[in-house]
Length: 361
View 1 (cartoon, rainbow, N blue to C red):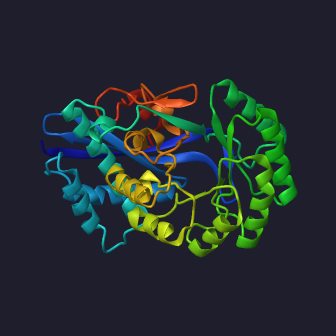
View 2: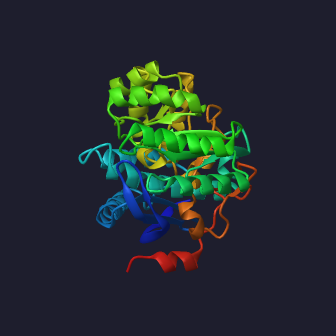
């Protein structure tokens, strides 16, 4: 079944409330929607995003460049197409926007493959489970007051979530610790709580913070230092008792391999876009499994879920509801678990009215 066309659409998705981390302030998710169509009319889609309209325009241009080596190919040969795109981006580099552009196309092709086989992708990949424990990541931002954090924590627990994540990186360590203590006190010890420093600390500060955070029974301590400081991250992982999570900003399985070789984290967080799509994400997860290291995919839950459900070393997934409005049938979360759909492919249907609403003219 040959690919006839690949279409791209720029979308600008406003957040209900501005978010802040130690390095970001964001009020919109700027998105490139990619739709592939076969000669028989079967469609699949994927998407990638940035927090900058200009960066997303560049990302769209990169997708359109890759389309030139995709149209006319047999859609079932996803690995072959991935390799063609990989060679195409060699000159501009195997990281950054080129890899993210590759991701969107790869995801759309896998969606079509599942539809052709009339099976959900997690079963095509050799399913390990049909539901995934998720942690709510769509709140608990650094810009929130302590009262906001407490109210939202109660809301998440009331919705049935068994885990969520909060951000740290306030001007003083005491302020961060006070906020974590307040949230832990209100939710009790049975809810999994993680913290994310968003790469905002120095190694020395991160170690001291990690030791003080040990009192709050955290599920993990995420990205205290820049992800490319592998030695620094390894020092922190060795020095603190709370498991260290990192890896969302490294590219492809090569980046994951370097982290594994340096023992830079206890839990790895491959990001679908930075891996270059489902094809490479699965290889990264298998690689981590060969080192007996657990994996938790970063964002892109809707598009990573099937690969994650076929990976025995995936422990928990991030739930970020940024793209729910684009779907007629967003994934269901019941009692803290994302339920894998049984519909073919990704099991998702685009809401054309929502796409039209948020399309950038």
